Length: 193
Image (tube, rainbow, N blue to C red; front, side, top):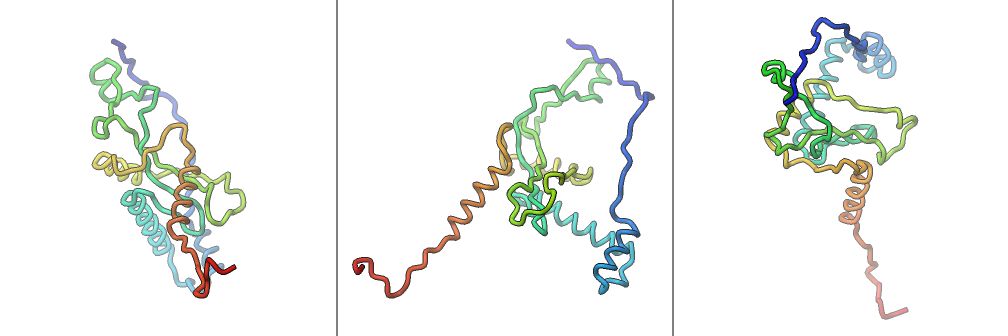
């Protein structure tokens, strides 16, 4: 049995600075680019962006295949993964009992939720797409976690060694084959050369 050493709650911390994109400067640049929205206030601008983000969040959670971001920015979806090999310590329970204990994910049959973002096979390649990344906000992660606990088998199972871009490539090929219609002219006769 492993004993658990309580963490130092008063120890030094490092916190990264939070950068907000929804600023007055951003609104000014938006109004300059789109003068028809010159009467838009900062509050309304933030409200529009937050509503759009909420709709994307709902789409990712409700749709098994996730969503395609506008302007060809990529795809986001939730996937089911096997448990990690390293231990995932439950700190609250470990502090209470004094013995190291791990999370077991009993709600999801010991499976893990991962939120994937890929822009590898987007329709329209854009400059510097390799530097784009996605980090979900806490509200989205909480909603996704609750949905995953209720219906974890709904989401796509992803192996640890599998490339996400390959999954989208096979899906796109299936869609192309399904939508393919062979055009045969009316006067075509296969026996007449």
